[in-house]
Image 1: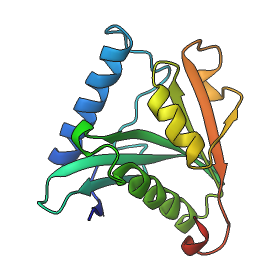
Image 2: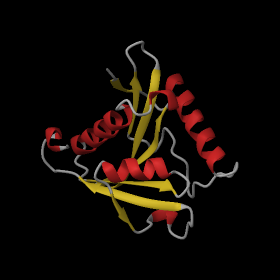
Image 3: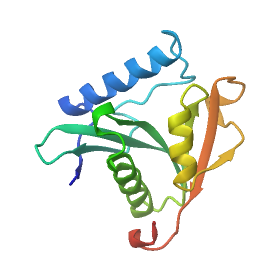
Image 4: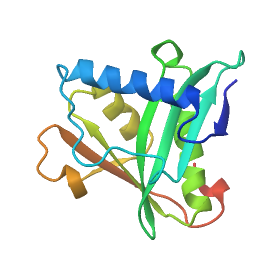
Length: 159
């Protein structure tokens, strides 16, 4: 059973999860920060969610940054390696999608990297489709971008 809570960007559990996420990404790309553009901050993240296991241990997180009046970008999606395969990632993703719909955003986009085949498989399995690189990712040889169009109705319409 996973509990997902909205927390401030600077919540200590979130800081720890995001630090581990960045370390894992850096390891996958040989110690190079491959993220083009501005990293997310408390000033530009509209939603930050943390997943907790039954013992209250933080095991995953994800954020939304608004792109325009109808779309948002998923940032810092991460699940602790020991919690992978347990449904935490799907639960966080669906909670982010519901939060987007609640705010009137009908499209969710994201960027992942060519060195993250597990993330690519996950997003494609969850209904995200590849799109051309957008924004700061244009021209990045390591970036892959995806989006999912959400229902404009009630949050329950998000599968």
